[in-house]
Length: 383
Image (cartoon, rainbow, N blue to C red; front, side, top):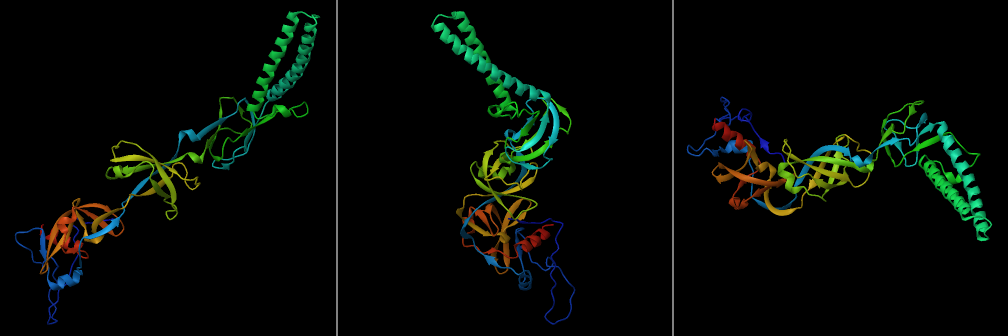
Protein backbone atom coordinates (compact mmCIF):
# COMPACT_ATOMS: atom_id res chain seq x y z
CA UNK A 1 0.00 0.00 0.00
CA UNK A 2 1.09 3.59 -0.52
CA UNK A 3 0.15 6.00 2.26
CA UNK A 4 -0.44 9.64 1.35
CA UNK A 5 2.69 11.41 2.61
CA UNK A 6 2.78 15.20 2.74
CA UNK A 7 5.25 17.94 3.51
CA UNK A 8 4.38 20.98 5.55
CA UNK A 9 5.57 23.02 2.61
CA UNK A 10 3.46 21.34 -0.13
CA UNK A 11 -0.11 22.35 0.59
CA UNK A 12 -1.88 22.90 -2.72
CA UNK A 13 -5.61 22.33 -2.16
CA UNK A 14 -7.67 25.47 -2.76
CA UNK A 15 -11.44 25.70 -2.60
CA UNK A 16 -13.31 28.77 -3.86
CA UNK A 17 -16.43 29.90 -2.00
CA UNK A 18 -19.12 31.97 -3.71
CA UNK A 19 -21.97 33.97 -2.10
CA UNK A 20 -25.63 32.88 -2.45
CA UNK A 21 -26.55 36.20 -4.04
CA UNK A 22 -24.30 35.34 -7.02
CA UNK A 23 -22.00 38.33 -6.39
CA UNK A 24 -18.35 37.46 -6.88
CA UNK A 25 -16.37 37.62 -3.65
CA UNK A 26 -12.68 37.48 -3.09
CA UNK A 27 -11.39 33.85 -3.33
CA UNK A 28 -10.32 32.41 -0.04
CA UNK A 29 -8.48 29.14 0.61
CA UNK A 30 -10.17 26.32 2.41
CA UNK A 31 -7.83 26.85 5.33
CA UNK A 32 -8.98 30.47 5.80
CA UNK A 33 -12.59 29.28 5.90
CA UNK A 34 -11.98 26.44 8.29
CA UNK A 35 -12.90 26.75 11.95
CA UNK A 36 -10.65 25.04 14.49
CA UNK A 37 -11.06 24.18 18.09
CA UNK A 38 -8.87 26.54 20.09
CA UNK A 39 -7.70 23.87 22.52
CA UNK A 40 -7.36 20.82 20.24
CA UNK A 41 -4.62 20.84 17.62
CA UNK A 42 -5.81 17.47 16.31
CA UNK A 43 -9.33 18.60 15.38
CA UNK A 44 -10.72 20.41 12.37
CA UNK A 45 -14.19 21.75 11.58
CA UNK A 46 -15.51 22.32 8.05
CA UNK A 47 -18.43 24.18 6.58
CA UNK A 48 -21.08 22.32 4.62
CA UNK A 49 -19.73 23.66 1.33
CA UNK A 50 -16.23 22.54 2.22
CA UNK A 51 -17.47 19.05 2.99
CA UNK A 52 -19.15 18.92 -0.41
CA UNK A 53 -16.07 20.29 -2.17
CA UNK A 54 -13.76 17.78 -0.55
CA UNK A 55 -16.29 14.98 -1.09
CA UNK A 56 -15.95 13.45 2.35
CA UNK A 57 -17.25 9.93 2.91
CA UNK A 58 -17.10 7.82 6.05
CA UNK A 59 -16.60 4.15 6.83
CA UNK A 60 -16.12 1.89 9.86
CA UNK A 61 -13.55 -0.67 10.93
CA UNK A 62 -14.10 -3.89 8.98
CA UNK A 63 -13.34 -7.57 9.50
CA UNK A 64 -11.76 -9.38 6.57
CA UNK A 65 -9.21 -11.98 5.47
CA UNK A 66 -5.95 -10.33 4.45
CA UNK A 67 -2.60 -11.49 3.09
CA UNK A 68 0.68 -9.68 3.47
CA UNK A 69 2.49 -9.24 0.17
CA UNK A 70 6.25 -8.82 0.67
CA UNK A 71 8.12 -7.46 -2.33
CA UNK A 72 11.80 -8.27 -2.73
CA UNK A 73 14.48 -7.36 -5.24
CA UNK A 74 17.96 -8.59 -5.98
CA UNK A 75 20.15 -10.24 -8.61
CA UNK A 76 20.47 -13.58 -10.31
CA UNK A 77 23.73 -15.38 -9.57
CA UNK A 78 25.20 -18.81 -10.29
CA UNK A 79 26.22 -21.18 -7.52
CA UNK A 80 30.00 -21.78 -7.65
CA UNK A 81 29.32 -25.50 -7.96
CA UNK A 82 27.66 -24.84 -11.33
CA UNK A 83 30.44 -22.79 -12.93
CA UNK A 84 32.92 -25.08 -14.68
CA UNK A 85 36.36 -24.36 -16.09
CA UNK A 86 37.14 -26.71 -18.98
CA UNK A 87 40.67 -27.73 -19.95
CA UNK A 88 42.30 -30.43 -22.04
CA UNK A 89 43.69 -33.49 -20.27
CA UNK A 90 46.70 -33.38 -22.57
CA UNK A 91 48.42 -30.47 -24.27
CA UNK A 92 48.19 -29.71 -27.96
CA UNK A 93 47.23 -27.14 -30.58
CA UNK A 94 43.65 -25.85 -30.89
CA UNK A 95 42.45 -27.12 -34.26
CA UNK A 96 38.92 -25.66 -34.10
CA UNK A 97 36.48 -23.92 -31.70
CA UNK A 98 32.84 -24.81 -32.26
CA UNK A 99 31.07 -22.36 -29.92
CA UNK A 100 30.97 -18.61 -29.26
CA UNK A 101 30.48 -16.57 -26.11
CA UNK A 102 26.92 -16.85 -24.85
CA UNK A 103 26.00 -19.79 -27.03
CA UNK A 104 23.84 -22.62 -25.72
CA UNK A 105 25.33 -26.11 -25.88
CA UNK A 106 24.08 -29.60 -25.07
CA UNK A 107 25.69 -32.28 -22.96
CA UNK A 108 28.17 -34.25 -25.08
CA UNK A 109 28.48 -31.56 -27.74
CA UNK A 110 31.99 -30.99 -29.18
CA UNK A 111 33.24 -27.62 -27.95
CA UNK A 112 36.70 -27.70 -29.49
CA UNK A 113 39.20 -29.99 -31.24
CA UNK A 114 42.82 -30.36 -30.08
CA UNK A 115 45.59 -31.90 -32.22
CA UNK A 116 49.00 -33.24 -31.21
CA UNK A 117 51.37 -36.13 -32.17
CA UNK A 118 51.30 -37.39 -28.58
CA UNK A 119 47.75 -38.59 -29.16
CA UNK A 120 49.08 -40.82 -31.93
CA UNK A 121 51.83 -42.08 -29.66
CA UNK A 122 49.37 -42.91 -26.88
CA UNK A 123 47.20 -44.97 -29.23
CA UNK A 124 50.27 -46.67 -30.66
CA UNK A 125 51.51 -47.55 -27.18
CA UNK A 126 48.14 -49.05 -26.39
CA UNK A 127 48.07 -51.25 -29.50
CA UNK A 128 51.68 -52.39 -28.99
CA UNK A 129 51.03 -53.19 -25.34
CA UNK A 130 47.87 -55.04 -26.27
CA UNK A 131 49.84 -57.24 -28.70
CA UNK A 132 52.59 -57.82 -26.13
CA UNK A 133 50.01 -58.76 -23.53
CA UNK A 134 48.54 -61.40 -25.80
CA UNK A 135 52.01 -62.86 -26.35
CA UNK A 136 52.67 -62.76 -22.61
CA UNK A 137 49.37 -64.50 -21.93
CA UNK A 138 50.24 -67.35 -24.31
CA UNK A 139 53.72 -67.69 -22.82
CA UNK A 140 52.33 -67.70 -19.28
CA UNK A 141 49.85 -70.48 -20.15
CA UNK A 142 52.61 -72.48 -21.84
CA UNK A 143 54.92 -72.14 -18.85
CA UNK A 144 52.15 -73.31 -16.55
CA UNK A 145 51.74 -76.48 -18.62
CA UNK A 146 55.50 -77.07 -18.72
CA UNK A 147 55.85 -76.46 -15.00
CA UNK A 148 53.13 -78.99 -14.28
CA UNK A 149 55.21 -81.68 -15.99
CA UNK A 150 58.41 -80.23 -14.46
CA UNK A 151 59.69 -79.39 -17.96
CA UNK A 152 60.40 -75.81 -16.81
CA UNK A 153 61.51 -74.28 -13.55
CA UNK A 154 59.35 -72.41 -11.09
CA UNK A 155 61.46 -69.31 -11.70
CA UNK A 156 60.63 -69.33 -15.42
CA UNK A 157 56.91 -69.62 -14.59
CA UNK A 158 57.14 -66.75 -12.11
CA UNK A 159 58.89 -64.55 -14.68
CA UNK A 160 56.21 -65.30 -17.27
CA UNK A 161 53.50 -64.52 -14.74
CA UNK A 162 55.16 -61.20 -13.76
CA UNK A 163 55.51 -60.15 -17.41
CA UNK A 164 51.85 -60.88 -18.02
CA UNK A 165 50.69 -58.97 -14.93
CA UNK A 166 52.89 -55.98 -15.74
CA UNK A 167 51.67 -55.70 -19.32
CA UNK A 168 48.05 -56.16 -18.21
CA UNK A 169 48.39 -53.26 -15.73
CA UNK A 170 50.10 -51.11 -18.38
CA UNK A 171 47.29 -51.82 -20.84
CA UNK A 172 44.62 -50.92 -18.29
CA UNK A 173 46.39 -47.61 -17.59
CA UNK A 174 46.67 -46.76 -21.29
CA UNK A 175 43.02 -47.70 -21.78
CA UNK A 176 42.00 -45.27 -19.01
CA UNK A 177 44.13 -42.47 -20.50
CA UNK A 178 42.44 -42.98 -23.85
CA UNK A 179 39.02 -42.92 -22.18
CA UNK A 180 39.80 -39.61 -20.48
CA UNK A 181 40.71 -37.95 -23.80
CA UNK A 182 37.61 -39.37 -25.47
CA UNK A 183 39.01 -42.32 -27.41
CA UNK A 184 37.32 -45.70 -27.08
CA UNK A 185 40.17 -48.16 -26.66
CA UNK A 186 37.95 -51.19 -27.32
CA UNK A 187 37.32 -50.04 -30.87
CA UNK A 188 40.88 -48.91 -31.54
CA UNK A 189 42.94 -50.61 -34.24
CA UNK A 190 45.79 -49.75 -36.59
CA UNK A 191 43.32 -48.44 -39.13
CA UNK A 192 41.66 -45.71 -37.05
CA UNK A 193 44.51 -44.06 -35.13
CA UNK A 194 43.93 -40.29 -35.08
CA UNK A 195 45.87 -37.18 -34.16
CA UNK A 196 42.93 -35.14 -32.87
CA UNK A 197 40.77 -35.34 -29.76
CA UNK A 198 37.46 -33.66 -29.01
CA UNK A 199 36.67 -31.51 -25.96
CA UNK A 200 33.11 -32.46 -24.99
CA UNK A 201 30.53 -30.47 -22.96
CA UNK A 202 29.96 -32.16 -19.58
CA UNK A 203 26.40 -30.76 -19.23
CA UNK A 204 23.85 -28.58 -20.99
CA UNK A 205 24.42 -24.88 -20.46
CA UNK A 206 25.94 -21.63 -21.73
CA UNK A 207 29.42 -20.53 -22.67
CA UNK A 208 30.37 -17.54 -20.52
CA UNK A 209 34.05 -17.22 -21.57
CA UNK A 210 36.31 -18.53 -24.34
CA UNK A 211 39.95 -18.22 -23.31
CA UNK A 212 41.78 -19.70 -26.33
CA UNK A 213 42.18 -19.09 -30.06
CA UNK A 214 42.56 -21.34 -33.09
CA UNK A 215 46.14 -22.55 -33.53
CA UNK A 216 47.11 -21.74 -29.95
CA UNK A 217 49.19 -24.33 -28.09
CA UNK A 218 47.66 -25.25 -24.75
CA UNK A 219 49.01 -27.06 -21.72
CA UNK A 220 46.91 -29.38 -19.55
CA UNK A 221 46.68 -26.65 -16.89
CA UNK A 222 45.29 -24.05 -19.32
CA UNK A 223 41.59 -23.18 -19.18
CA UNK A 224 39.80 -23.30 -22.54
CA UNK A 225 36.23 -22.36 -21.57
CA UNK A 226 34.16 -21.15 -18.63
CA UNK A 227 30.78 -22.86 -18.76
CA UNK A 228 27.62 -22.11 -16.80
CA UNK A 229 25.07 -24.70 -15.83
CA UNK A 230 21.73 -22.82 -15.57
CA UNK A 231 20.46 -25.43 -13.12
CA UNK A 232 22.65 -23.68 -10.56
CA UNK A 233 20.95 -20.29 -10.94
CA UNK A 234 20.27 -18.68 -7.57
CA UNK A 235 18.34 -15.51 -6.76
CA UNK A 236 19.96 -13.35 -4.08
CA UNK A 237 17.11 -11.22 -2.71
CA UNK A 238 17.16 -8.36 -0.22
CA UNK A 239 14.71 -8.66 2.69
CA UNK A 240 14.10 -5.48 4.68
CA UNK A 241 14.34 -5.69 8.43
CA UNK A 242 10.56 -5.32 8.96
CA UNK A 243 9.92 -8.37 6.78
CA UNK A 244 12.72 -10.68 7.94
CA UNK A 245 10.49 -12.65 10.32
CA UNK A 246 7.92 -13.24 7.57
CA UNK A 247 10.31 -14.69 4.95
CA UNK A 248 11.20 -18.32 5.68
CA UNK A 249 12.93 -21.27 4.05
CA UNK A 250 10.53 -23.33 1.94
CA UNK A 251 8.18 -20.48 0.97
CA UNK A 252 6.98 -20.38 -2.62
CA UNK A 253 7.55 -17.05 -4.37
CA UNK A 254 6.93 -15.46 -7.76
CA UNK A 255 9.89 -13.87 -9.56
CA UNK A 256 10.17 -11.71 -12.68
CA UNK A 257 12.69 -9.48 -14.41
CA UNK A 258 12.36 -5.81 -15.26
CA UNK A 259 12.26 -6.47 -18.99
CA UNK A 260 9.21 -8.74 -18.76
CA UNK A 261 7.36 -7.97 -15.51
CA UNK A 262 4.09 -9.57 -16.58
CA UNK A 263 5.66 -13.03 -16.92
CA UNK A 264 6.27 -14.52 -13.46
CA UNK A 265 8.09 -17.74 -12.63
CA UNK A 266 7.83 -19.97 -9.58
CA UNK A 267 10.73 -20.23 -7.16
CA UNK A 268 11.34 -21.33 -3.58
CA UNK A 269 13.29 -19.78 -0.71
CA UNK A 270 16.16 -22.19 0.07
CA UNK A 271 18.12 -20.10 2.55
CA UNK A 272 17.83 -16.93 4.65
CA UNK A 273 21.09 -15.43 5.90
CA UNK A 274 20.53 -14.61 9.62
CA UNK A 275 22.25 -11.25 9.49
CA UNK A 276 21.12 -7.66 8.91
CA UNK A 277 23.58 -5.74 6.74
CA UNK A 278 24.46 -2.04 6.96
CA UNK A 279 21.67 -1.17 4.52
CA UNK A 280 19.06 -2.56 6.94
CA UNK A 281 18.32 -5.74 4.99
CA UNK A 282 19.07 -9.45 5.12
CA UNK A 283 19.65 -11.79 2.18
CA UNK A 284 17.32 -14.58 1.11
CA UNK A 285 18.45 -17.17 -1.44
CA UNK A 286 15.84 -18.63 -3.82
CA UNK A 287 16.01 -21.26 -6.54
CA UNK A 288 13.77 -21.41 -9.62
CA UNK A 289 11.40 -24.37 -9.72
CA UNK A 290 12.50 -25.10 -13.28
CA UNK A 291 15.29 -23.88 -15.55
CA UNK A 292 14.34 -20.60 -17.23
CA UNK A 293 16.74 -19.17 -19.81
CA UNK A 294 15.23 -15.68 -19.40
CA UNK A 295 17.11 -15.34 -16.11
CA UNK A 296 20.86 -14.94 -16.55
CA UNK A 297 23.78 -14.27 -14.23
CA UNK A 298 23.90 -10.63 -13.06
CA UNK A 299 20.30 -9.78 -14.05
CA UNK A 300 18.24 -7.67 -11.63
CA UNK A 301 15.09 -9.47 -10.51
CA UNK A 302 11.99 -8.83 -8.40
CA UNK A 303 10.02 -11.24 -6.27
CA UNK A 304 6.73 -11.39 -4.41
CA UNK A 305 6.02 -13.43 -1.27
CA UNK A 306 2.47 -13.98 -0.07
CA UNK A 307 2.46 -14.41 3.68
CA UNK A 308 -0.24 -16.67 5.15
CA UNK A 309 -3.62 -14.95 5.28
CA UNK A 310 -5.28 -14.09 8.56
CA UNK A 311 -8.67 -12.84 9.66
CA UNK A 312 -8.16 -9.32 10.95
CA UNK A 313 -9.59 -5.81 11.14
CA UNK A 314 -8.78 -3.03 8.72
CA UNK A 315 -9.77 0.08 6.81
CA UNK A 316 -9.67 1.09 3.14
CA UNK A 317 -6.22 2.35 2.18
CA UNK A 318 -7.37 5.92 1.53
CA UNK A 319 -8.69 6.20 5.09
CA UNK A 320 -5.17 5.85 6.51
CA UNK A 321 -2.76 8.76 6.08
CA UNK A 322 0.90 9.07 7.00
CA UNK A 323 2.72 12.05 8.44
CA UNK A 324 6.30 12.14 9.74
CA UNK A 325 6.53 8.32 9.66
CA UNK A 326 3.39 7.85 11.75
CA UNK A 327 -0.08 6.74 10.64
CA UNK A 328 -3.41 8.38 11.39
CA UNK A 329 -7.14 8.23 10.69
CA UNK A 330 -9.82 10.91 11.11
CA UNK A 331 -12.90 10.28 13.24
CA UNK A 332 -16.16 11.97 12.25
CA UNK A 333 -17.38 13.52 15.55
CA UNK A 334 -20.55 14.92 13.99
CA UNK A 335 -21.53 18.52 13.31
CA UNK A 336 -18.73 18.79 10.72
CA UNK A 337 -16.04 18.13 13.33
CA UNK A 338 -13.20 15.71 12.61
CA UNK A 339 -10.48 14.50 14.93
CA UNK A 340 -7.13 12.93 13.95
CA UNK A 341 -6.35 9.68 15.78
CA UNK A 342 -2.99 7.81 15.71
CA UNK A 343 -3.14 4.16 14.65
CA UNK A 344 -0.70 1.28 14.33
CA UNK A 345 -0.91 -0.52 11.00
CA UNK A 346 -0.08 -4.13 10.11
CA UNK A 347 -0.22 -5.89 6.77
CA UNK A 348 -1.79 -4.35 3.70
CA UNK A 349 -2.93 -5.31 0.22
CA UNK A 350 -4.16 -3.39 -2.80
CA UNK A 351 -7.36 -2.24 -1.05
CA UNK A 352 -7.13 -2.51 2.73
CA UNK A 353 -4.72 -1.86 5.57
CA UNK A 354 -4.76 -3.85 8.81
CA UNK A 355 -5.29 -1.78 11.99
CA UNK A 356 -3.68 -3.26 15.09
CA UNK A 357 -5.50 -2.78 18.41
CA UNK A 358 -8.54 -1.76 16.39
CA UNK A 359 -10.91 -1.93 19.36
CA UNK A 360 -10.31 1.79 19.97
CA UNK A 361 -12.04 2.47 16.65
CA UNK A 362 -15.05 0.25 17.33
CA UNK A 363 -18.35 1.96 16.48
CA UNK A 364 -16.50 5.10 15.34
CA UNK A 365 -17.18 6.76 12.00
CA UNK A 366 -13.87 7.04 10.14
CA UNK A 367 -13.30 9.38 7.19
CA UNK A 368 -12.50 7.42 4.03
CA UNK A 369 -12.49 9.76 1.06
CA UNK A 370 -11.04 13.14 2.00
CA UNK A 371 -8.76 11.98 4.84
CA UNK A 372 -5.73 13.36 3.03
CA UNK A 373 -7.40 16.75 2.57
CA UNK A 374 -8.22 16.92 6.28
CA UNK A 375 -4.60 16.18 7.09
CA UNK A 376 -3.46 19.07 4.90
CA UNK A 377 -5.92 21.45 6.52
CA UNK A 378 -4.91 20.39 10.00
CA UNK A 379 -1.19 20.67 9.45
CA UNK A 380 -1.58 24.03 7.71
CA UNK A 381 -3.30 25.31 10.84
CA UNK A 382 -0.42 24.08 12.97
CA UNK A 383 2.16 26.24 11.19
